[in-house]
Length: 438
Image (cartoon, rainbow, N blue to C red; front, side, top):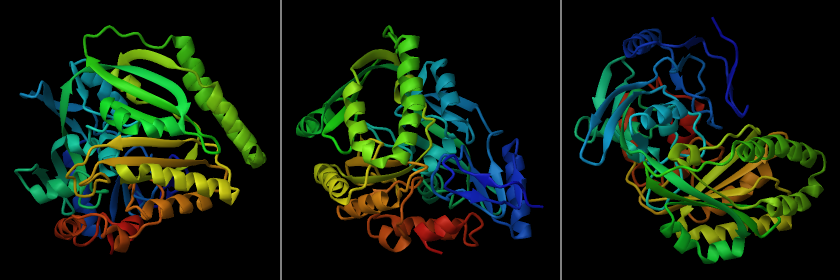
């Protein structure tokens, strides 16, 4: 009864599930899980397949949640926003549009919006902004289908241990069917993108990180050049002045995707040219300034295929970590065409959040899919581990439960919740065994 091979977006993981299921209701999902339990089959849910890890891989039933989509309810609250309950398979880009037309927005977003809500939450998706947490911090309640097929509601007040484990849970304690999000009144953002130097950016890092709503930068290895992004939140009724369609098409499609794909193909054939390519690329970038709906500023289209690893480090460790990466790149002779992305997040209390208990800087490294990534990623991982770095759960890394336990204060609480709600490991797979133990 095996199905066609499934693979994720990056092509780093494949699976040949026993069955592929697309339930159209929560009750149908519940019945499917109950049946699987009776048959002794494993079950994994999959969203947009945008994780680089094997978090969704299974040889049992692979459950696609695309048919569980849309807004279920909206309840106004006293925080100038609303509690919005959505079905787990809702894609973020669809949700953003639906929220906007209701006068609402998500508090913060990552830099892509193709994921499902449940998938983004379950792997620890985050954006940038020193005052803002990852997507899991916006969750106020969940509906979860457990290993016996039961449909359980959870929140900080109701089944709190399930709530804490499931809001960023790697799909390890159950299948999320509905999510209640704290949303805010919709807002626009004023975006300023400008080239600069790595040294000056680090010199004023504390000022920009704490003084700009959403600050990030991209450093071009083999150079001291960066591209900075400063996004400022404005009221929702602020007149917008988006990029001219032609400028947006040239910058975001032609340069970012078409030309960048070509550059990486050349770099694959002639790696020694990469330092000069990076020098040129970093110098042709000009300043862009525009104002648009928040979700349009947060997210961008990325069609060049790559491998990615991202580490969360204490914010005070960032300059030394970048210096160590720079030193390794220059001394190793390894060439890197993709810029290094640096973002920020506030400390939070989510058990498996990469920002749990500390203000955090994120260092994301990429490699074109046709090139070897392993030496680079291994070096960056060692540098990050030396400063107690935590890997993004949905991106490539080599960490295991034994050493992850020491960096997550609530690791054993999570494992205990997993033991309680999925003692038979119906939702388990090789990746979860690696990062959580058995």
